[in-house]
Image (cartoon, rainbow, N blue to C red; front, side):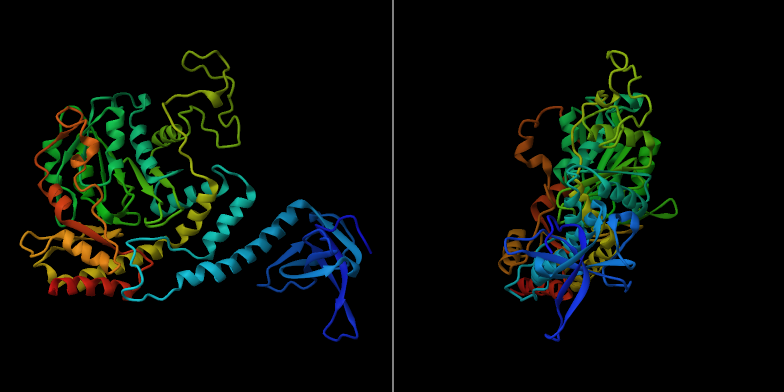
Amino acid sequence: MTYNSYLGKIFKIEFSSDDLSSSKHRAALAVSEKNEFGDIQFVFVTSRNTEGKNLIEVKLEDCLSSSLPFTAYIHSQNSIVINESSVRKELAELKPQLMDRTFREIIKGNTISHFNSYHKKNIDQPFVEGSSRVSYAGRVFDEKEVVNLVDSSLDFWLTTGRYAEEFEKTFSKFIGTRHTLLVNSGSSANLIAFSALTSPSLKDRQIKKGDEVIGVAAGFPTTINPILQYGAVPVLVDISLPTYNIDVNLLEQALSPKTKAVMIAHSLGNPFDLQTVKDFCTKHNLWLVEDNCDALGSRYYYNGEWKYTGTVGDIATSSFYPPHHMTMGEGGAVYMQGNRLKKIAESYRDWGRDCWCPSGKDNTCGKRFNWELGELPHAYDHKYIYSHLGYNLKVTDMQAAIGVAQLKKLPDFIKARRKNWQRLRDGLADLEEFFVLPEPTRNSEPSWFGFLLTVKDNAKFSRKEIVEYLEEKRIQTRMLFAGNYLRHPVFDEFRGTSAYRVAGSLENTDRVMNHTFWLGVYPGMSDMIVDYMIEKIREFIKK
């Protein structure tokens, strides 16, 4: 029997059985139209609900028409290609919503098969000493991230959507904040976090041009850049070894009547002294911005309670670039407890608009055409009223979909980082003659981003020599980011001006710039890889 269309319909079909002298009749759902040869792809429909068999129930309300003689279940992973000549009778036509669900299940199965045949083989490549590259970091994923990514692409909702909303809620629950806003990178997160503190709505606590923000020069540029770009003044102080974090003894020296905030990072996963820094900020009514991009999952014993870094300050940031603790490709987050800062940060992220309607929705406030703001005419559309000099820094839902899967793995990622760091620390413990070995900050439990080593002055080798040796052995190394940011070409135009100031000396910052490097501890490293790094460092020392 020939039909004009097949896709989305359940038919009784006839096909040969194992016994070539007989044939069988089965119900099957057409998931394609016929091709030039009259062949059609079907998935079988069964009357038995067998758990774990990728079955989708067909309810009467899911059908445009139905004469099914039994309760039906679509077997999404059991397909067959049959010629239209074997089609005997139309039994039902499904609504597009059920077909969407069915195709998603079919595509999910195919996506998992693709992952297993391609990505998994690459991931499972054995480590070969001297041949395999030891990366300092990398993405760690399985089929769940790929399935989520493909699933979100099928929505073709190309901006922030359902996965972003799920991620923001789940992330807030994990880390312990009331609000999370996804953005397109960790650097954008720092920009939004600082910009929020420049909002005129903060009144006397607004950071204005010429106001000062205490920070460090030993770190990543985007912890400082927003301050400079706005016209505020970064006041930079030195760090302490072996924690590589801000020297809290210099905070009072850095303070001035113009100080409005402290903005610093937890260095390579090691929390800075949050108790001292937060007490200092509280005492002087200063904002505290925690750059948590390298420390997601680190904890600090604050006021008698273990808290995740990023939850003690007023506002915090994370990065989801592939080397970080979890990834969504590009991506980042801004998170905070306060409703006021959340609304301001959201405005800066979303073009600077005054409206807080989510994408695709109107009139959340219930008075869309009844606001009188600025010098605009009465009843101007609230969706196009702007209260800040903002940006568009939203994340796509496809990125967020990857993050949703990664977030479920985050506790295991954190454990692996701690384990690898400790294995390195134990394996190099007797080399303190040559290196300043890293130590966790007192009252902290780091989620390490890397393992820092500073070559001592009395060592008979330089950082350049050991780094080149390790790189020759295919072990990736990294500097502590900018080292001393003030030494970079970007500061050529600022030197000798009042655009920034230094409180005290930057002796340790310069020391890090000249003598420090770090190795990876990311979850993709096996014990064999960590032991190989230890072996090659010790081998170099002997030579």
